[in-house]
Image (cartoon, rainbow, N blue to C red; front, side, top):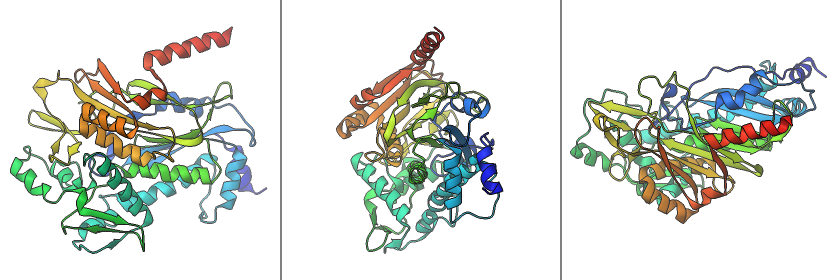
Length: 445
């Protein structure tokens, strides 16, 4: 056994990472993205960071990894043995000469490599990305792209058709108009109807085609068409990295990128070493104006995922992190491609009105509904609103949870969910805490 192998086997403590978050209309810097699903980092990661019992290289344990990508953060927990990771490292023909001094560092490298690939494709903040090159071109001929780019656009186009254009990646110029994309110049006043109508001439998913044969490509029907993949690319990156883990034989993991989640298998309980299913938290959609960075998010509902034979997905979209204030009006990054306007423009003097706060889409099998699709549908259902969104969710058989705020404080939240959502083992925070306390009392007897 080499020194590197011994080092990997003996290292089971987490190497803390240094992170941050994303999105609006494009991949933005810092924690501006609406991270609407919280994995309860304190709840889920604390046992793995501080309370992990000593285990041998052949025993299952939880390894954590984290990093940054697309202007946001990613976190992963992988249930595996140190021996498995040593074998993966030894079989990696693409690894560099960099020192891999822990299993966590190895995992971070495997995941980061896949996530960086999507950043190279979909970032509107990089002039060298595929999407930026496509947007810069004014040719109406077929434009060659990577297979991944074609697949992302194909998913987006299918969701656009299924939601009557509520999700539309050609919304890019409207996203920039409202300053949620690369254009960060100050917005002095809300755009006029005339400005909006002029820009809408360059919007419409029917003006975009995608193909896979004879080689992957995109085609514009109007030279000025541009696209924004931020509503689907993070979900796609989670799918890509999750599939990589599964191909490496790591079929028990939870992976989150900017709030979009894919999980499979089980975790190891830090106290009992028993294997348990993943429990994910859906955040309460509270508007926090001044101290967003300092306040810990509250969890409204927990979902128990028993994902053994298939990987599962969860994606949430909401209006309470990424928004702008223009005069007395506040509006979020959700732009309705059909009207060219934000879904809700809120007068700060009318903060008591009930408004949709978030939409969560769940999938028990990523083979049937991928994290990329859940990501896009969450945006579409938010744009559609509770009534229309619920109708289409029922038609598609999608598992969807709508959370509306009684007011901006989110002290009172009402929920509407689709029929398919009832099949999940889901509990509100109070129900979850009561169940947890009951189980602890029973275990002491």
